[in-house]
Length: 153
Image (cartoon, rainbow, N blue to C red):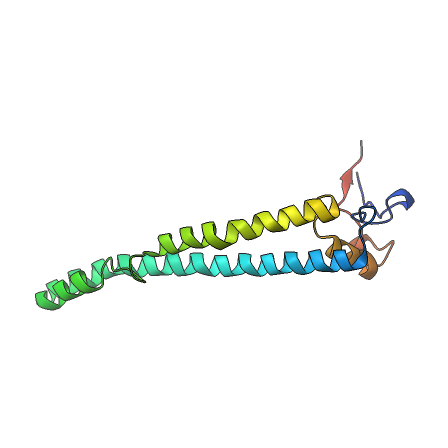
């Protein structure tokens, strides 16, 4: 049998705000986390770019083969020499761009956000969202429960 935890009185918040953390700090940490989430999306696009560019490069093998078969050996060779395996920016394939992005920007941003959460909110993540959920949900409604269902023995 399952029961919904609808935030009993001793747990009146989904994620209790640590003592001493004020509204502005919660808002600031929420903004910082939102910026990191946007960076996560940008990083995903970078991986899309990486995979699409790699796929296109592998597809050139077929184009070279077909150009040769069609009697256009000079064009097949031109595609092979000029485009196949070409750097996307000077000295870089896409994996190198991802590696530089991760080392230079993404990981330092992740570490800074984690440090800010630890120092300013005792490591509590998503306080802004947890408080928004608590404000917006309908207490007592099974589809607005504070927490996921728990198994009862």
